[in-house]
Length: 549
Image (cartoon, rainbow, N blue to C red; front, side, top):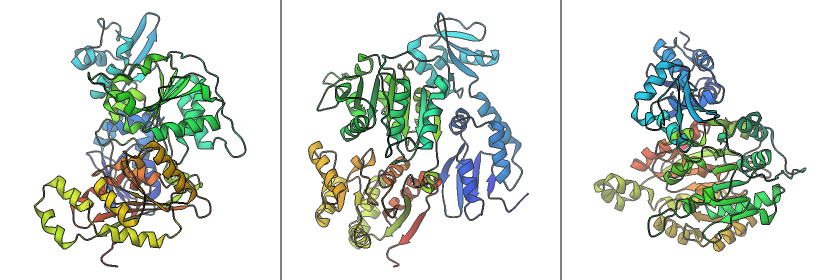
C-alpha cells in the first residue's frame, strides 16, 4: 500500500482518482487512454474501464501490459486479480476474429475453434454466413461486411477488418503548403496513423475544435489521390470545406461539388450534409442515398462523426470497401452508439489531449466557469409542481440569467461574444434585451453568412445563437462563450461549444467559457454531467455563486 499515490482501482472496473494529489494530472492523462470519466466531484473523479475503451486503446497499440503497468503505477493498493483477469480477457478479444479477402470472396476467420463455435451458434452473427464454417473460417457476403461487424461488437468480439478496400477513381490532389500553411507535427502524425503505410484506411481522428481536423482530412485526401465524398453537419460547414479545399489544395472549382438544398453538384470531390443524405421524399424514400454509389468514391470523410444519424449508419454498413475517416472532437454519444462508430467507421486511430495542444499554443487557453443564479420568486411554485422535463426548461429559461450576461459583457468589453442556448423563445427574448442579432436554424444562409462576416470584422460584438453554433463554424476571433441553456446532460455538446472559442488568438491567447445555471434545480444536476468530458481533458470549472458576490 502507498497512500501517496492518487488512484484506487475497484473490482467493478471503476477507478477513483484524487484530484488534489501531485500526480493527478499525469495519472489523468495516462488512464484517459483506456478509461472513460463517469463523474467528477471536486476531490475524487470516477473513471470506468469499459470494453469499448479498451478496444480503442488496443487499436492504438496500447497493450494489456501497458494498461496494467499504468494501474500499478498510480494505485494506492495492489490491483485486484479480478481486474487483471478482466482487462486481459477484454483486450485479448480484440483481433481474435478477423475479416479477410481471399480469391473467392470475403471470409470471417479465427484461430480458435471454440470462438468459431460460439459465432456459429449465435443467431445475430451466423445469419450472415453464406456457407458452413470450415477450418475456423466462414464465407460472408461483401454486402454484409458492416452488418456482421456490428453483430460481433454486440457479443464483444470486436473484429479486425483486414479485407482491404476497393480502389476508387483516381484524382490527383496535393496540399498547397507555404510559409503560413503547413502540416503541424501532430497533424502529420494523425495522417500517418490513419494511412499506416498504405495498410490503413478506416478509423477516427479525435482532436479538439480549432486543431485543424479539416486540414488532416485534406492531407489524407492528398495521400490517397482518389475521388472523395465529404459529409458534414450543415451548409455552412459544406462551404467552409469547399473554401478550405480551394485555398489549401490543388483542386479547382470545377472539381469540387456542393450537394445541398441549394445546389446538386456531383463532382470528383463532393461535399454534402447528413441532413440531405437522410432526407426522405413523400413516399418515405431516402432519395439522396444514391449519392453514395453515384460515383466510384475511393474515400469518404465523416466530419463531426459523433453526430452520425442512424440512416447514415445503415448505409455505411454497406460501404465497408470504401476508405473511411471520421473526424471529431469527442467520440462521446449520448445514445450509446459509440460501438457503431467503432464497427462501421473504425477504431480511434489518433487523439491528443486538449491541454497538450494548448501548451504549444495550437489552441487557445480556456478558463471555464459555472455561474449559479437564483430563480425569481414568481417561478418557484411553477417549478415545484412541474414534471421533470418542464422543471429543466423552467430552470434553463430563468430570466435572472440576463443580469449575469450583462455583467459578463461589461467584464469583457472588447471581446467577441457568443451567447448560446437551445430554447428559441429564450434566445429571441435575450436578443431583444441585448440588442444583439439572433441566429437560428431558420436563419437564411445568406443572412447567416453576413452575420458571421460582420462578427469576424468586429462590426457585431455579440451573437445570440442556437444549436446551429454547436458545429463547424469558423469564427476564429470568438473568445467568450456564454451558455444559457443546453441539451440536458450532453457532454459532446459542451465540448463542441467550448470548441467554438478555442481557435488560437492574436495577442492574449485566452478564451472564457461561462455556463449559467439555475441554482438548486435540475439544470444544476445536468450541468455536472455536461462537464465530464471537458474535465477529463483537464478543464476544471470554477463554480461561482452569483448571489453570494
